[in-house]
Image (cartoon, rainbow, N blue to C red; front, side):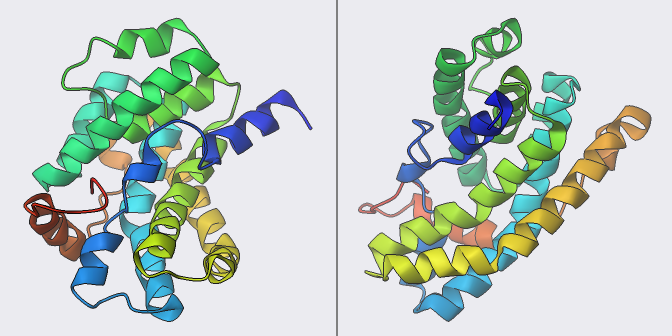
Length: 225
């Protein structure tokens, strides 16, 4: 296995200290609302999140990996994240991922993000981390797409006492969707050179945005988002 292939596995590994374990990807609010109750409803949630927020994150990551201006991509990420709670969560995850990535693959491009306040968006950091690790934009898109499905599935195991085997089977069934989203995201990112950040997708999931704002007001919760 090449070093780049191993780096992709490391970036996609839930044990990589990037803070994702503290976030449910909207599952905690969906469970409370009764929208997720079993593996079937979780699968529908993960698929929907993958093709909306996941597609946007994958395209941003691919564009950052391709070397497009991180500041412009960060602004584009803000415009595509209308819910303040989700913006804050993305930047919180971005700060944590940046710390881990600078330790694993130190480079000037990652160092340049450190002064950005209140922190860079997670997909932008993911793309630059992938670039620093020698990965291609399609790899960065695949890591982001996989995270869009795997984080909610992992959180549901804790929230619903779901059988981990069911969660693993769900992710296996979503593999083709992950690849398709990554391919589309990489193609959209490639168009940024000609059309600017307007070429990036802006798929929306209003229910995720609304649920995130409600979730942020809960006095007691298991996950940060």
